[in-house]
Structures are given as C-alpha cells and as structure tokens.
Image (cartoon, rainbow, N blue to C red; front, side):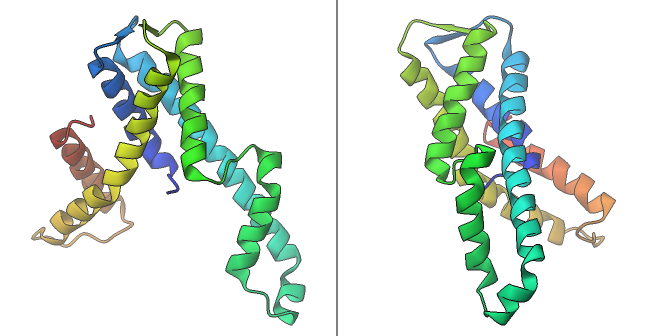
Length: 183
C-alpha cells in the first residue's frame, strides 16, 4: 500500500520503538535520532514517488488530445507510464520490495551513523524494521476509521478539510497510536 508523507513520522516512531524494544539491539544515542534518521529516509522515498507521479501527469496532460481520440483508459495509461519511468526516478513499484529496500537503507543509515549496535545478523535487524513498516501499514486504516467515527460523534460538527478538523484528527490519531504502543 502507498504511504503518504503525513505517515512518515509515525512509521519512523514505530521503527524506533520496535528497535528499542528488541532484546538484541542497543541504541547508542537514544530513540529520537533513530526515529529522525528513519523519517528522513521514508520522506525521501515518498518524495521520489511524488516526483515520478508529477512527471506522469505532465506526460498525460501533454498527450491528452491523443488519449481522448484513441479512447485510452487514463488509469491504465497512468500505470503504464509510471511503470516505464519508475527506474529513472529510483522508485520500486512492488510495495513489499520497496519496503524491504527502504528497510536496508534505514539499517545502513543507522549503522553508518553509529546509532545502533547489535550482535546478530543484519538481516534480523532489517526484519525488525521491515515488520515495523508492515505493521503500521496494516493498522493505519483501522486507526483512521476509529478517529473518523469519533469525530462524527462530536456534539459540534467538524468540517473535513478544515483546520479545526485536521487538528482534532491529528490529536485523536496520536491518541490511538499511543493506545496500541506505536508512539
């Protein structure tokens, strides 16, 4: 599943918490530098895909008349163009492969900056990172549904997209993450 930039800090926190709670990893500078390093790499990965999709939209816009004349399925064309350009932008389209690659990058960054130490195989540590990403992704839709339901039950109705709605949503979202130990 595709992740957005707002989720990067939460995934990074989940990674740092899971590494901290691991019995075979020692954090040399605490949890925050680990979360910050992971967040930066996650945001970089998301930004690559955003840039790729912006280019795909540009190409589709440039060829809009031809696509309409030929009655091309725009959704299918978007995917075909994205698939063709993905290697140029360094984007892995298979989410499982992408999160595995991201896990390796995070691990390499943590080792290079001496943020963690361990006496087990790198693969075992990488799996902790990968499982953190997967776990967050599996749960975040359920958490969002709970938060939306809570907001619907507010006495005063909040308008989705408004600043007040976003503030309340963020607060409730963080509370839900704390309840399940993701923050």
